[in-house]
Length: 376
Image 1 (spheres, one colour):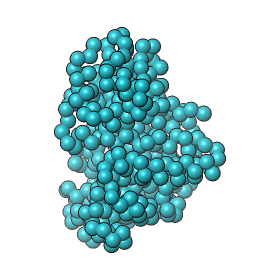
Image 2: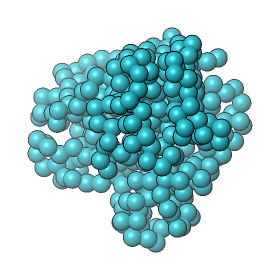
Image 3: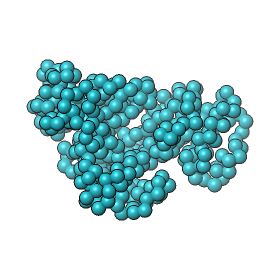
Image 4: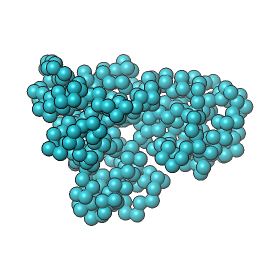
């Protein structure tokens, strides 16, 4: 079985007719596979991986054929001054030459430190598999498969759970040992690993940097730095609180979730919440990438500790409040309170639910149905 990622493929092929395209995302999420599938559409295309010595020399000398239609650069972010290199190629290329770049989280970094590629590229994030994407690929699967095997293509398709466990152990170990040092200097890897293990056990709760710092015996700023590294490696993502226009809201620490729900140490309810969080995060990010929408995923918590799991915000205005439950079909009090107070639609997403229903501005939906309805 092959997962085509056809929605991404179609959008990227369209964008290549306009600008360069950069694909960023977690390691082994399928970026290279997708790029090579796109390359098949171009008889005179070339794939160049900066990690390979012979390819590196071709890249440095720009020794591709004059009639090349598409160049796929893989791991180019490891090349010194890669942004200016791409800028030079793009500004002097023939009109029919298309350029596709894939790589790790480093592709996102230049947006934070000045961008010499402004106006020359579209950025796409390739995230792990979700129910909505598989539905668009004409695949019908049960949600529990994600919990058993995770959301990465190789493990998701595997029929051997022992192989899945071995893959995951190797995946995390490789990232924390090798990728960290290519990303940023870390003197004490054991501390970073300990922060990682603590986060696995605190999914769904606002992160207390002070509490983790005491457990690891480092400063809160060091904890923040370690979490940023884990983010940049696409092991975790953060969901900040939303405060604007919400009375008595408190700016608290973010919640941390994992791109692979199988990494979580917790009960089924926490794992389900993480999967919903990842699906919503992918939904919001892909709407930005594909349509340029200003959509953010937040959570909500007030001074009197009224809390909602998630809030989709567009142009700084709440559009949808979302509460996640494993089995509870009764509408959560806080969801009803905020939905009525601010006249915002609410959805209670329940994994184990027999009958869906609506009460006022709030819908109670089966988890699989809601997740399949997201953008991607």
